[in-house]
Amino acid sequence: MIRIGSGCDIHRLVSGRLLILGGIVIPSEKGCLGHSDADALIHSIIDALLGAAALGDIGTFFPDTDSRYKGISSSELLKETMQLVKKAGYRIVNIDSNIILQSPKLAQYKKPMAEKIAETLGIDVGCVCIKAKTAEKMLGELGTSDAVFAQASVLIESV
Ligand code: MG
Image (cartoon, rainbow, N blue to C red; front, side):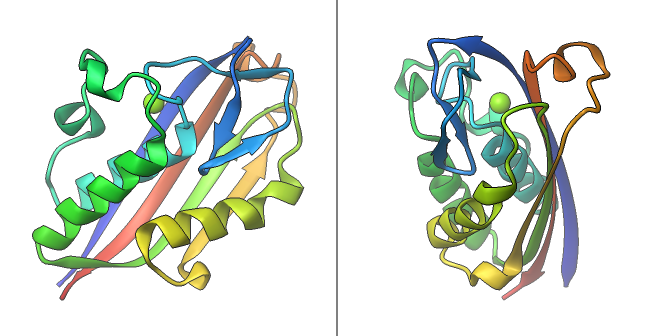
């Protein structure tokens, strides 16, 4: 059986935080604010995976009220999510995703992000696509580089 899942996430960007997207640090004046490392891309992929397996959402498994997850690398949460998906009897077919970030430009980081995500999930890098665009300086905080938005779609199949 093949199943589809989708996820999205948004985080505020502030000074004094690292910008971590797709599990890698991206040089930037501002970074994502959040309880964990606030990796919006990985959070959207986690939600898409959990959704595809009808397991719930990121808050079900990794609540931001839990001190265990304070400052945690979202790649660790993604690894745990993969275990849940495996336990439910599925493997990943592919992941497609979008990031909306006004600045910095992400063109040179798309491949490293895909490689890191593929490695974290134990899947082929050819199964992971990351696309990035700006907000054309529109949409409030997104257009002024005060927020980042990410979206992911995944396909899983029964093992
Ligand atoms: Mg998040």
